[in-house]
Image (cartoon, rainbow over all chains, first blue to last red; front, side, top):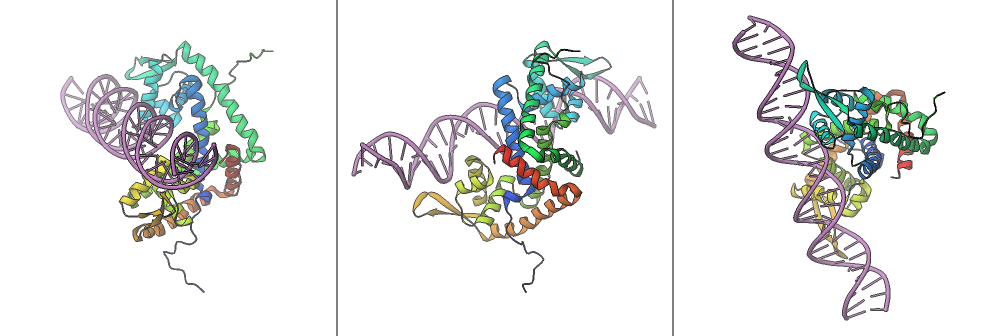
Length: 152
Length: 152
DNA sequence: TGTCATTAGTTACAAATGAAACCAATTGCA
DNA sequence: TGCAATTGGTTTCATTTGTAACTAATGACA
């Protein structure tokens, strides 16, 4: 009988079986693939993509709202917006009742890009889900559970 | 009957329901929490942590092997190792048969840290899994499936 | 009203990251 | 052998990111 000291590290930890590591690798792969796709095809970064998605889904919004809905901090949001405005994909119109806020809306070019990227995103997602096979059904509930325990 | 043009974007895309986004947010949260933990307690970054885990699990290894086993590119590995060596947590001994390679091993300090961080990592993982409840059982198979389709 | 605290958004600075160039050692092969 | 191609690992440079400080505008409340 081997006594177990309270600091006994136990068996060595297998990185390949460690949940946070696996999650990170998988997420990194998927995001990376999508990032390359949008980068080469639309000169669009992931943060910029998220901003477009939020504007497309929720209409004219402020930077703060974008941040809340996209889980990005305000600096990242600010920079993504700045670039989208510079590329003439978004317009900023000051809120008359609070001149700190600016409402974001698509330009024609922005709307056009949005119309292109949404189906593309769906297609990528659909392909992954199809490849997943039977596990596909569990994925949503598993992610929901993770979001719950990690406090979205 | 509305005809559907081939470019019809369909309903606006909900970021909160978009798989790559959800995966990224969840992974980011978990990794972030762990990163802060290791940073404040051991002055250890995630890449450094991964290197220690690999050395602890696979014994003396080279930088290239670390890269393969931890899914990190060689630059990140090189820098993590450099810092671990500078902090006297790892030793590098040149391979006599190939003087480009250096075998990495723990110093006493490195081994001590490794003994501390592994149980801590397990504890974090265990807490998440416990919080997951019934979904816990699906998580592993779901991740395995994702790894398969995304090509680990 | 006047002032202090808060909020929206930007900027400045430092750290992390990756692509590409790089050096040194080894291998393949004429 | 000798030389080109490859491999292990590091460095350089540009880009991305986050923290903290900042400006401007609004709100709270004496």
